[in-house]
Every structure is written in structure tokens, then in C-alpha cells.
Length: 291
Image (cartoon, rainbow, N blue to C red; front, side, top):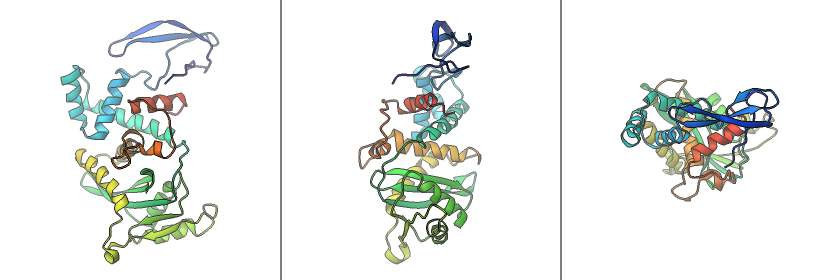
């Protein structure tokens, strides 16, 4: 994937190479001289001023979101690559680049089906049980929207449903029998608040049918397993970011076990990512000037 080079000061592409800058961990970095604003710069490839190699950073993000704690990731780098970092650095990388990539992927166009499945689950954060809401397009297995809240009520359900339909307009959304969903559907879809959009609300009531809303619950099993690996979440400001990282991993990084395809690609978003998907996503986010 080619990287577009622009002057960081004036955005000009009228430049020349001007030697290199030696760094301790990243080796030599190319320097440039802008012929328009007469200033030196190094290219922002998504890792501007980072002290570690992009491959180290993205491997750490990938492994942390997949299954390793920040401390275990630190230990792995030390044992296998003789590379010393703090476990806090791993968490900082995850949070920093999750926010960067999330803004980029939210602007992509998705080709989704007309049947969505939504639910909420409880997430342990320092002994408190927060709520994590999630909506899935069954055909592509793409998570279309998610929401983090401290409780479950009609207003939070309404906010969640707004996020759930940003990537597509389904004919129906199936939920469980949560008492907060019907009011949220009435507020959103049976008025003119969303341009007259009507979405049918299907309810899978386990007490009546003895059937769970299993299509979304299989996703929750995977998400909650990862949160258990986190040993619960910590700070409230950080928890939604880490949950966002898990969603990016699901939608853009890993093949789904059933379809054997990456959900985003099955949904028509083909960014031509290489094997190191986090690396390419971060570079694309930087290229599109999304910080």
C-alpha cells in the first residue's frame, strides 16, 4: 500500500529528500525539505513521533485485543524480540489507534442485508455492571452499531438504535423482550424523527418461545470472553474505547469462524488490507487526515 507524502506544515507535495534522522528503535527515518514553505519535515505514516516500530505497535494491539493482557504482551516482546516496553504503553497504543481507526471506518460505505439482531449485555467494570449494546447484520456478521452505557432504559436503547442503523437501513431489528425496546422503537421509527424511516420490531421472548436471540448472543459470548481476559474493565473513560477495539477486531481484522470471511469485506468494504490489517488501517486513517 503506497503512502502519500505531504508537508506536515503546508500540505504541499513539492518537496525533496533531505537525508535521514536516526532513531533508537525505528532505525533511520527519511527527512524531507518542502520547497514551498522552506521547512523540514518527516512523513506522518500514522506513527509520527512514535518511538517504537509500527510492526511492534500493531502486533501489540492485535495480540492485546485478541487474547493477551498488556503485561503478557510486554513479557512476550521482551522474551522473543528482546524489546523492552511498559505494559502501559500497550494500553496507550490500543486506545490511541482505536480512536483513530474508528473515525476512518465509520465513513466507509457498507452493503448490508435487511435483517438486524440486537441485544445488550452486562460488562464488569471495577465491580459495577455496565451495559454494552450491540447490533449484528446476520448475512455479513458485521456489527453495525454498538453503545456503552451505565444502565438500560428507553433513552439508552434509543441512542443505541440510532447507532445501529447508521451503516444500513434494515426492514426489521430483532431483540429480546427487554421492556425498554418498544418505547425506543416508537420514538425513533414511528414518527418523522428519522425521515419517516420505519423499521419493524421483532421480539424473541424466551419466556414464551424458549428460544434465545441466539444470533447476537453468539457474538456476545466472544466479546465477554475477551472482557474476562481483561479481568474486567477499569476506568469509565477507557472502557468504551477498549470495547470499540474489540468491535474493530471483529469487523475488520479476523475471519468469522462460520463464513471464513472478514465481515467488513463480506459487507462490500474492500480496503485491500495486507496481512497486518491494523497497520494498514492506521496508515489509511492517517492518509485520510483523520486523527
